[in-house]
Figure 1: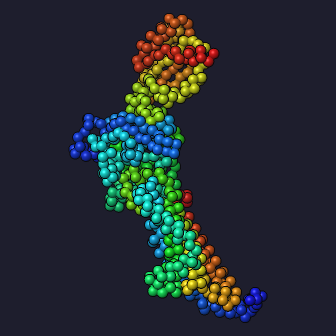
Figure 2 (figure 1 turned 90 degrees about the vertical axis):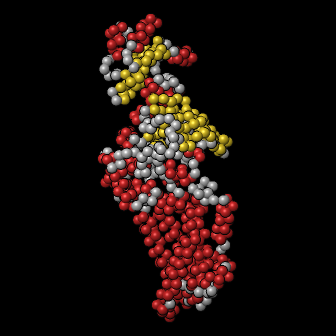
Figure 3 (figure 1 turned 120 degrees about the horizontal axis):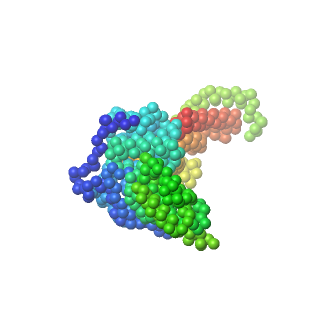
Length: 369
Length: 235
């Protein structure tokens, strides 16, 4: 699948010499970005004072519920939407100051894939991949050759002469990815690119995107409402709520210890309603795995043996990334507050494990009664 | 005017003679004026229809609002004048272009004037069927407005355009029959001259049957072609 990179192995460095870099490694920066719309129901603040920095080589996730402003944000990055306020700085150039022609130039290096694939339905897959090349007047033969290589890269060389309607959703997205790579972009924007696909296909497409990121050195921004997507491929994430970034950081950090409510709701959706856990007002602790080698030791059983504390599991949500575990277990610790303290100190010794005493559930229970 | 006498053996024989002698040329005139007028109308109406879509405020290449309003008004005006009256109204224009206002070639001018606003509206509706996301995708690739029109809007709407042009051809053929009333040639003229002015109903009916047949053939061909071109259908 990766054979193409032999031919085009050097990612194009986008006029790095002409414009001074802001900071080493910074590819794109959003500064105090706001977008207001005027609708029939009055003005809408789609985005409010967004600040983001995406480094070269990142797979940067932007996650939020629908209506959070994700799609508007990604469209501000390539200026399909003009921000009302603030700057988008790509490689030291403020995109807001560029002429239409210069902007078109930039868009060849910042390409995009979509939830709906958006292929030309009346054109073969090959012609679809050739479209961006046609736009830059590449000679037909050369464009055809390059398009074929790209179809090979995405694993669909045999579909060159098929029409999109004859392809499955996953295959259509592969063609769209090939098309997005045609002009050798530096940045690939994925707007809910896997939201219309089943989990298995989603996984395959994400693998492809990660491959592209690693092997071609293309930076990726992933817009999604699915935490699993961020978890699977992103190294950094911003959580967007009501047009604002409420939390951002390394994916592992945000996952293991979400601070904002929006993050908690996205990461532990089952807790959003708060009643999935049986509680009788006991002592509860939340054991958070921040990349612990969880499979190695039977943690809870070991605690029973070592401390004589027979914890019951009230709820859990863990995910493995590679061989590491992220997520949490909610435990009920029977006995006295001293037992609780003992359990906390015992579990805290484990590497990459964070223990929090849960108070909110007791309060909730109290409020309910 | 006795209808019972319209289909006596002599009348039928006469109609048969007319069919053999005058119909071939009349059919040719009908087809020729229809196709020429349609072609001219597409030449004017297609770009106009594209402008109606791309030039609006939210289009890919917004044009000044007064211009858009003017174009829309012009189209609506031309569309609301009945064809038979339009033909008479623009006789000076026809004379200026063709040199005469009588004859098959002269009838192409009013046919074109009547048909291009119709075509423009049909093109407009075809282009509006296109998924706006595909246009946005082309913009995200750095396509110019002209490139979007040529590489996205028009190719993607080909099946719909064929369907609509077929509709236009059959409508324009109906107009050519009307043009027979004021100097145009073709089957319409034949039907009027024999059937209306000389009570030769057999000829009139024959002319109508031939018109129906031609319409059927064009419509079937257009439908077939549109289906064949549409790659959204799995073959």
